[in-house]
Image (tube, rainbow over all chains, first blue to last red; front, side, top):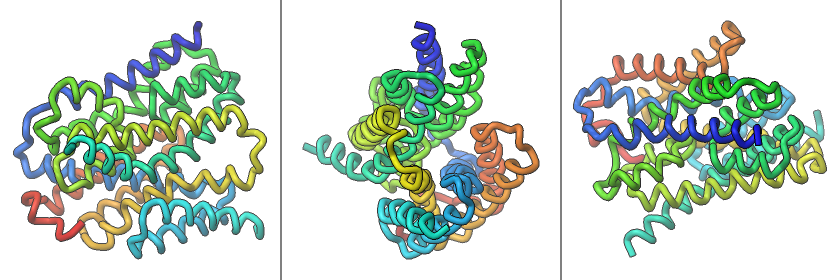
Amino acid sequence: MTIALYIAVMAGVTYLIRMLPFAFFTKKIESTFVKSLLYYMPYAVLSAMTIPAVFYSTGNLATAIIGTAVAFVLAYFDLPLIVVALAAAGSVFVAGIFI
Amino acid sequence: MMKRSSFLRGAVAGIPIALGYLSVSFAFGITAVRAGLTYFQAAMISLTNLTSAGQVAGVEVIAASGSLLEMAAVQLTINLRYALMGISLSQNLDPRFTLPHRLIAAYGITDEIFAVCSTNEEPITPAYMYGITAIATLGWVSGTFIGGFAGQALPAAVTAALGIVIYGMFIAIIVPPAAKHRSILFTVLLAAALSILCKYLLPSLSSGFSVIICAVLTSVFAALLFPKKDEEGEVSEA
């Protein structure tokens, strides 16, 4: 019962944060500055979420660095998302055998 | 006809997200069960929240028997970035995106779905976003369920390797455009540098709040240094 209440609050707050701006902000933004800001935002978000968190993602700094390096190289050569992601995990697994 | 193909395109675009989610939510399922929840409760949290950092923090609040107010404040802080993403997405919507569609599709605004939608050239249709969200949610909820149910049985080497999957996907999204556009390279490097500073100089800052600060500061600098004239001007072939 109490757990259900916790979950309801979590879900309600999270939904409102997503819904209110998305549903009710319908103006077209004209300002070049704001447009540019929104254009760069996803890249900034993803980069900030990845670095340095990725180095802690495997519980071992060395295997994480190897996995990250593999992901960077494959991404640089424009391989599909899923290939990059699974190759990173595969290299962490293999590196983990030796480290 | 149009609608269905758009839904399918979205579902296909969502497959890597779903696989990434599967591994991350797997870890979440293990965490939640360790914190004393049942695997069914863990899966319900994933189904109703569809967010990683917020859910982990939420389980911590539950485990510590925190107040509901604390729960609301934690979710607001960590998930506030979705409000910015919602505004950003609202700028590139197909006319078919009426209010009822917006009310439903808002459920699917996550970092990854946002990244895929916002790097899409054409205006986003409701069906496309539903396609991505459906497959991503499937991965997120089933991963939580399996992780909560059977997680402890899996070898540690496998769960460790799965931990990097979602970051591998992030890297695959940001590296190719950063290699092509100096402005995006600048954005990625500055955000990473600020994020490192936040992590080590302000260790008490929550990860959700740190992401907001880093992303907003970085985007302001990038927008000032590399203003984007119009949609066609900047991107050559993405």
